[in-house]
Amino acid sequence: MTTNRAHILLWTDQPAAYLDAVKAAGLDDRVAIDTLSRKDKPTADQLARTEALMAGGVPAGLLPSMPKLRWAQAMSAGVEGWMALPDLPQALTLTCARGTHTESMPENIMAALFYAAKPVHIAVENQKSAKWVHTVPQPLTGKTLGILGLGVIGQEVARLASAFGMRVIGTKRRPGEMANVAQVFPAERTNEVLAQSDFVLLLLPATKETDNFINAERLANMKPTAWLINFGRGHTIVDADLIEAAKNKKIAGAVLDVFRQEPLPSDHPFWKAEGIVVLPHIGGPHPQRDKFVARLFVENLGRFLDGQPLKEVVDRSAGY
Image (tube, rainbow, N blue to C red):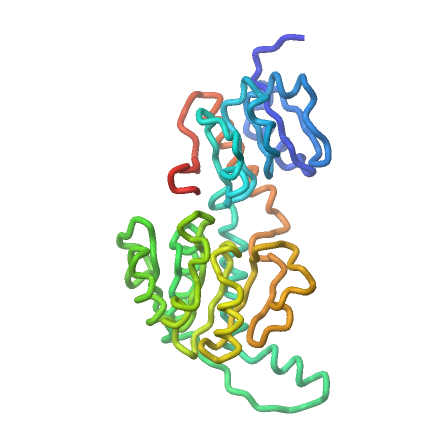
């Protein structure tokens, strides 16, 4: 059966939110949608007719076998898996889910800040042995938060941190004035941010430039009372250097939500390292996460159908 509807492939285990969003936007009569669970592979017919694809990722060899494919929507903000494909078509427009974590991740980052500053976890441990140990919480008010990677998430964290009386500084690829941020530095002045900060938040994208970015040399610029918090990408940190810095009190500690290998292997030294807190990549998940991504997907779908520029297009030269 022939149709002039655009053929869309939703390659996800939970397509309901996306199908509902397409219908609510009044686009269902303009598209023919196939849904496919992640464990399955597209059929030859699906490969031949798909014009737009939404997926968490794809294996090498798939995209070149989709002759009509013009747009791919990644379901996450990070696209290092897509960028690593040896056969990513040059003409393919790739968009990411940048901005869809702005409700969940900033809150979880604030929780990490409170964990570092407030002795709640110490009290919980002492409760197990019925110990009454008086501890003094550290204030966030008056402290400096340095954010490496002042994108959408970083700007929202800056807003929340400012409400708690924190001074926020940070780095951005293209520095400029920013609400709730006292000073924005270019990446080459990262060491100045590290030296001033009581808490350093990593929100860096996955690129060649950020690989092993936080090493022994940069950690040495941090205050011995400062905490490192990583909600960006695991490969930005040299693991051994961080373990050594925390163990020898060169920094106060670290809260890590992302890692080079996930799940983090049970024999990884992070699990038992002094001063390091391991979170199981909980920064982005949200009970309504698919609805947030669906909102962006449907807006882009409407633009795609109307021949308009898409939102959150990946800059391949920058890698995100």
